[in-house]
Length: 119
Image (cartoon, rainbow, N blue to C red; front, side):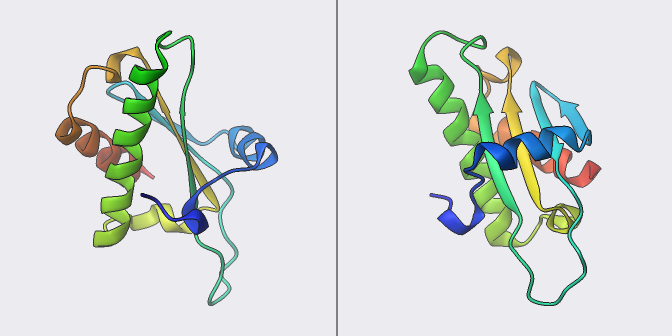
């Protein structure tokens, strides 16, 4: 489970990240990156949010499974330190679409890794 200090929770934080207009899309998952951090030593952690809309699939079980897969893939990348330039941003939002619903964990992990490398 992703620790609370790495989760994006407030609606205002989601809105600010969307307004930054920095997005990339691959394989049914879209990544929105927020504002860049100021270069202060010992600053805040990059926070991540995971969204799958009700329009994507009407069953909550399917939506929540995709969110869990994305969250776990991000957690493992965070643990291994393969996040690259994504740590320079205040917040990240991963949005799943219909194309990503039927993918297994390895494919979702590869997609998230590619999106983070694009930043």
